[in-house]
Length: 129
View 1 (cartoon, one colour):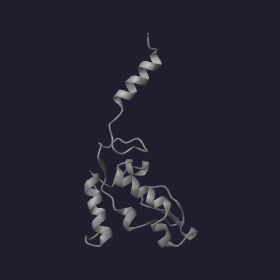
View 2 (view 1 turned 180 degrees about the vertical axis):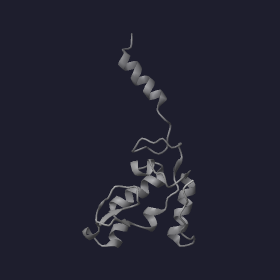
View 3 (view 1 turned 90 degrees about the horizontal axis):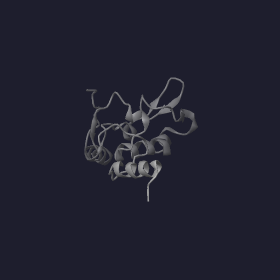
View 4 (view 1 turned 90 degrees about the vertical axis):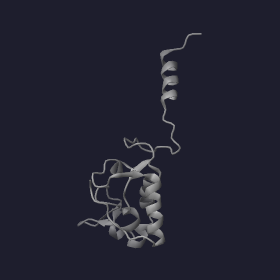
């Protein structure tokens, strides 16, 4: 039995598929197992001069500051999605293309987040490299 070019291409694509434990929601050019060294979605919100709310200065706005109280924004579904992406390496496009935060291993970021959330570590802003 002869395979068609589509069958061969599909078989080759399956063989070349990355062996990742974390499914990638977005295409990532970062090394497998890495993420951005960013605590912003856990520690702050950015509010633009026109009232737009963002998780950082690079991200698109989620909504307007008057849509809900600030404390509600900190645990909004939008912020949680950024957090999940950073902790899994499945980065949102704004994080993927970030020019402000260097890369770090996922395990290192998880340890930093745990310490900040537990209140056992000071929040420091990583400096661009």
